[in-house]
Image: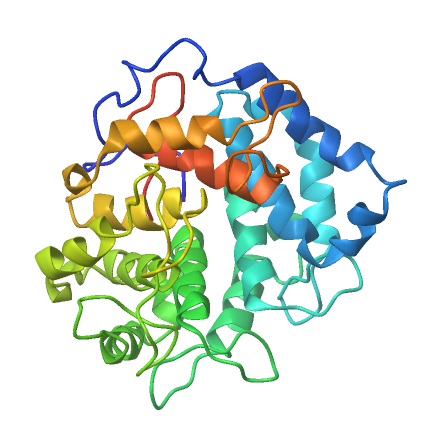
Length: 324
């Protein structure tokens, strides 16, 4: 996900919504700014394992809202670099073990704030050090990627590797062909993709697999109509989207499903107006933030993916976003 307009973005969904369903931009900005001021709350420390991801989610949300200055750039870069290990990888917070997912968030943050120069100047062996950490996690036989030294594989990690390395301009450090072959091994009869070969189709895994193919320039391998049929069936009566059949709708799938539809140019296969209304009903209009479902407690994860989904369907007042 980056703030670049690309083909596939819809045109101004949400323009016919009632007055009580409006985006509370300033409240969302204030909510995100407040997140690092709650250090006396137990929840703050219970979520330390998500700290670096959380910075990425909050920063991206602020950029989508048109307020990139709302988080201090220098302090953000300092925190990211404090999470790096000697092997080039990043942990969730200082002292946490390095992992692919945190490393991807670190790269995304640094690119967003223009901090790659600081990575070269103060990081562990600069961009090359990060790329070396990522490339060593690829299985040279089947093309898959592990999340860390312990070896768990997941198509999320494969997408993360391609995403981070493409942002660093170092895709050549991995075997992209084998990575593509592994993605193809994960495709199912319904057109979707799973976490590993043989696993059921899931909207989150579809996003990472299609995103990986998009970065690799191999969208020709996607059965777009079959996949779009499965994705469009994720929309339920409320207008929200679920991640797989018979599951509840959840705002986060406003990103996983809609971004996948955007990448295969099938955004018009869902009711975008109903989706926009659902996301807006999940807002906290008084304190800001977006929840998974109306009436639930908000969090920064659902806030960024709700806003990103709205951006993809062209909701007014948001910056455009690249679906990969």
